[in-house]
Image (cartoon, rainbow, N blue to C red; front, side, top):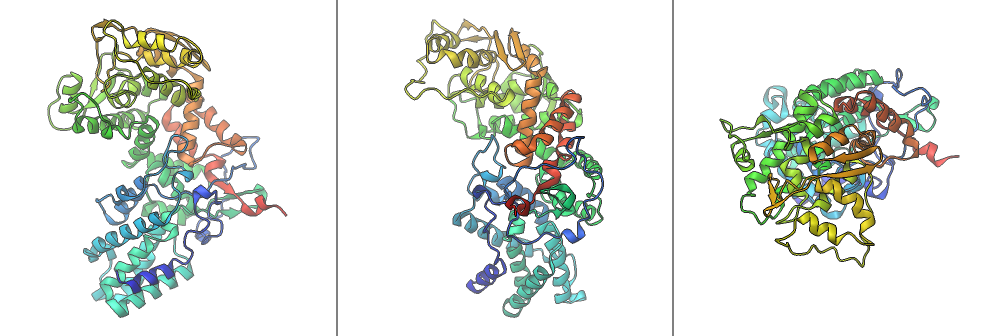
Length: 560
């Protein structure tokens, strides 16, 4: 693209990114272009809120920028791209355990440059197949008429709402100027590049509709609701059917939103967010980059472990309509020939992954899968501390404090006369370590039959393994003989269910819960408990809360 074109694109995006940086705590859409609420419905009808919460109470949420994963999914669905340009972007930071929070994606000059480079490359590739991109015939229809149709249609898909009148005028004027200088094909290319750099493409801008009866809350319009649904359940931009539903007012009532969410979960794209949540929650996304001392831990095995977990959670949650308890205790997994050989399981026929039943004394759902066991380990040895800490943090929402600064956390060299458990118990028996490690160590020791790369081991360097212990956090109370009994105990815990509601809240809404979210969090916890921890039910309920359907009114926040 020439310097002239870059300047013109920059002029078109005059709103820039001011007020959109989630890390700066900017309000959703404050000071940005208005949404197309005129076509999004009235917001009247069933609000889906419980008795006592009739007036929505919503914590302030910063606007969210697309993550690298969401960006890749979005440009794939918009343009058919398969290059995954997001891999070249600056990685998000981890906030509240996930990378999709508003504070995880701060804006910077280098990020803007990355977006520009990606937009130019994507636009160039898209225009190489101009008939498919345009959806009209510039010869038969006329170039300008075809371009106008494309700008309107592609603009709705890219910005996730109809273009406003001034936006439509600006893009058409931009196209005309570029056509006069560079010709039709290049002008279309520049329009695509410009839209892929627009704040309303890169950010999930939300304005909402004022409702005097709802205090300081604004109901999201149909297009904003469609966008929240699509990125929550599919990890990508709304498709035409979802945008059409928004235009027809079919997302105005909470019951309609729920019905749409049910359809979206059943769609094959419904696997995306279910898998992404669990892989992030399990802290296994970096498994392919782990360095292990065992040569059996090959790149193919590491990648296969992530596929194993992704297929398992989708099978339990969507195919079998399972519960949190099923995720924690089901003695089954998915393997291909290479992963089966690695685990010492019968090798399946064919090249793909298949579901296999496991010895119930060994396999116990997510917690014993290779990805998690290898992630929660050192290069050569398992880590009972990492594993116990994971149970406390991710399942019980009771993270232990960090060790004192003056404590040496270096593990002793392996002693051939002692198990790792015996060495660790000796190391942490006295103050200041004993207080925390009395809680951390037992659930970690439960997984001692799994080595540093996630394989079952019968002994620890020839010494007998003792995976028994006790746990006493929240209502997760009792003794266990091994990891399968620990998993069963956790599966029955209200504390664990409440913790998973919090984890899903953070993932779905991109922020932590606050005092004003009480109606939302209580409704989620009650529904999850009433369904015996059914994960699909929780996903649906996440679309019914004030925290999902509304946003705060900045004018009401400012006061008189």
